[in-house]
Length: 249
Image (cartoon, rainbow, N blue to C red):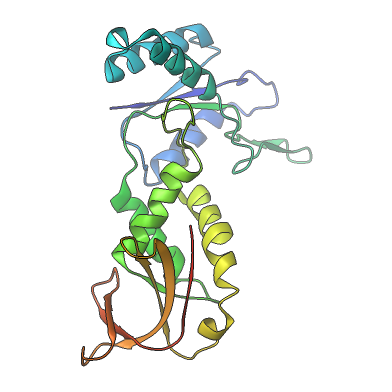
């Protein structure tokens, strides 16, 4: 699988001549979440050509020729949605004094052809959760999987076709960090009795019983009798017997 990234409006005279090489150097220095990303300049290739490539790729992946006409129409609609503006995570800015321009990603088109690399994203999520100076916590594997599932489906699923639109970032941090801050940390701030306790915090997910995320106060497990025993994503086991609170994601 591959991802096609389309760069539009790249003929601006304010752009330094080295902008493309600088951009590619920045990208190559980061860990890509999607494999085999293809970059295309519309000034050299043309938007219509890229749309044909997109349609061809969607056809090969989804066997569009064999689908009913209503499904075909839905996939054509997905192609239109792929022109998603990413202003929320990136910006275009120009320094008039130094005449330096930072190339933003708001004019990029992403065609997702590879699944989300959950191992790489889980590692990033672990670092985000454990390195927070104000509210550091550990995650169980089930909690990590639930949060990544929310990243993949909650924000970017297309309601009609079920197709998933994902945004691209060199290291994958911006969308995950936003999800963490808005949909995990904000509910946790209401768990005053839990976060005020002088114990380790472990975020767990109970999918089969309550379908909620649980923030628990825990101690390293020495005896399992009488206490809730959970395993964090770093391999350690915890006795969680103190205060706890829950919320939906």
